[in-house]
Image 1: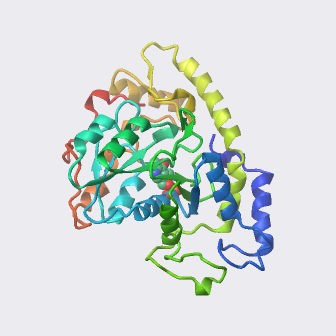
Image 2: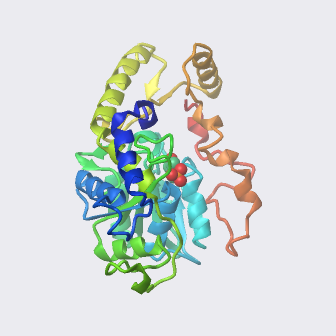
Image 3: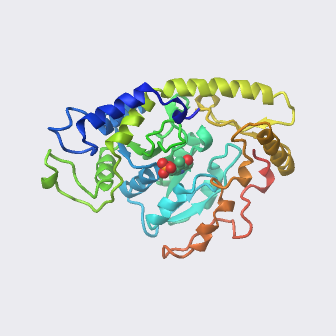
Length: 364
Ligand SMILES: *Cc1c(COP(=O)(O)O)cnc(C)c1O
């Protein structure tokens, strides 16, 4: 149940408050804005909910990922380990940072397999971008420990996992930086939006500056601010932040409803002995945006997805065929090989054999 299904008076009121002032910019205009700072308010609320020191709201989840990479100083020559099952933004942002995405296998959690990550390390590995796919977590404790042991930067792409936790700790708070998306189909939506979170003051300072052309945001006069670093425009508008603020306050209710729906579906589908469910390292922390299960083979998985579709179950996918989330469908990535002046390295997965998990090709 994504947020767009429950727009109501709350979203309308927040947006109207912005329109009443006419100030759509998140910085400055102190006189005109009548104390309304929607982006700031959202940041304080999200940081509070996640129990992190700092949050910076930006234009999208993709912008958040780029901002996190920049803040962590990841760039040319650096390798970042990524999963082949994610949204392409995880890869795009690494390429645009001038770094090299290196694919490691996922396991049945549908997220990076820590052993595969370890096997993929090279002397150039700088970081790991773990993706908590489909609302539930990777084996994040093991990945965090591995990164600590090897001196690697852990970035969490928690764009799909707002509201999820691992042993009580919110997803997105395990790494050096965590990234969230509030695009139109995510659990909480701003229309378009994203956020980076961190406990590290220095990383936050770089992030919030990078996302606004390097402005340092010291003092109240934008014209007199310093620009200590180069940046980009990854700012969010007050209108988008206002929608998100109302949505964020509905997060618990949404997750609760999703979990209840998941239980009903799980009970119904679990009656079929051929079905096994995606193992989730901490089932109680699943934000329950998806229910993923395995069948014996590819044919049956494809058949079951089609049959569910015919019965009107909107959004039943056989993940292996999914056009958005899987390396197999990203021909454009291969076609730009070399374009970043670094070779794209696909681990042990040469072009034409892009089946990272041949033994587990029955995902639905
Ligand atoms: C949605 C998503 C993104 C990108 O977020 P946008 O806000 O759409 O730019 C990145 N990673 C994952 C895993 C996503 O699902």
